[in-house]
Length: 385
Figure (tube, rainbow, N blue to C red):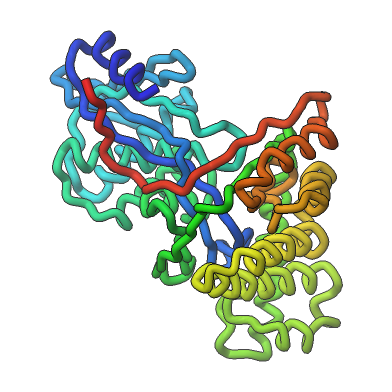
């Protein structure tokens, strides 16, 4: 794939490019906690977007999306949101560097990769992060990784129109092979925890269900959490978000919350506690305990936060029946997408056959199954001639 992208660049632009890469990501535990200023536990994976780039002297940005076989050009001096959706991820990153007062001259770019679309591995974040890393390196701008992560996030807000949290871009930029990253979404402090997968594998199963409800329900969940915070603030001075709440606080005001807001707030508080317990389990090498926390996360997402769907619940139920499966849960915003399952290496084939035997996508097909390996974040890509 990387060689093909390099060769396409040479065919289109007649020059040898610099090569860069940025990975997709998974999140092991900590879902919907990011916008509540809580914790998340993502990791970069071995599915990635590759970039071939080189400055040009024609005063235009010339982009080519390898996977779509589509070209895009625009004047370098006057960029804005384009009608070409995929180009906005690249243009949005250029815009952030320029807003920071940095010079980004015209350049050529061919990009493409194997981060599956719609699988919850954040292909869009990988595109933004890879573009940021490539621009920074190509022009020697000296921007640090955290600032580039923020540029990538703002590109998504301002050019792609998605008001996302920072987890996806953070994981793609800061990932470390063999480790998960515990990110504090309030302070952006982070810590790596080792994930020795010698005897285990992470397996994603795609439900084949699109996230049709995700955006509207996402906004509702945010509003419900904010309502819970407003109620708590009447009684507790130190509560800025649900990050500051405890189970005792939630229980003490259960009647005032009402059933729905109570369940939303209860889930968030419990999920943050699960994540912290999960980090301890990983530090202790206790994969069985971590797996049980993954199952607990799914139960909370399904019953308290209500962002699962029949298909996700069915896949987790199948996982529970397979010896050697330590934990499984839905991953991402919900209402479709993938489950992520922690399986003993010797039992992966048993798990995959159980899924194929017992689950079909809504259009009657076998589900797509991905094994992923924890990988490094964005960086240079070297191709041997």
